[in-house]
Amino acid sequence: MPLVFPFDPDITRASTIPARLYNDPVYLELERERIFAHTWQLVGRTEQLSDVGSYFTAEVGHDAIVVLRDTAGLRGFYNICLHRAGPVATGCGRRQTLQCRYHGWTYSLDGTILRSQPM
Image (cartoon, rainbow, N blue to C red; front, side, top):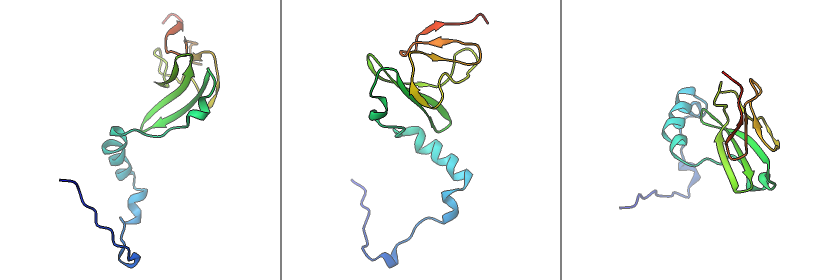
């Protein structure tokens, strides 16, 4: 049976949750866990990635991501280096590779390791 949410056009009878819940850290964490972790989240627009090599970074919940366009299409990765978990990209722009600034590990736009330094 579908859920029914009655609509009352009389705004004087409208209600909302208490204002403190909009910025309470406890409720933010609950929303991250119960809503945002289980649903698609908008992080950008395809127009931002019109050219091969274009990218942008974002955060979804507690996860840093990088979204980019390579020759095969759009890709999204965790924005971390496999070596020491430093970011492989910052901000937005256009690049031919992704590279960690910590030790220089370099990845192709499809996520393949191109160059790694000895551990």
